Image (cartoon, rainbow, N blue to C red; front, side, top):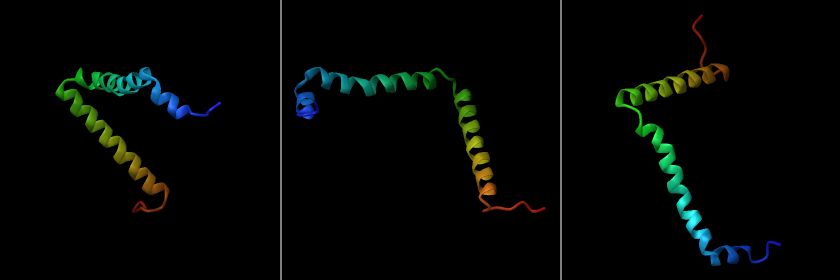
Length: 71
């Protein structure tokens, strides 16, 4: 069933067109959301992402016992 599968896919010209078109379509679709935002909205999004990562990082340090609260 899978004999010469690689050779068959290399011979198929439509496979090359599909493989090369997929990343560009995905990239344009994902950048469309960020392209529509104003600079202030991008800054707020980046700030919220930064705060999310720092809070989750501090919580992980506390849970794993690397940091203790000073009570």
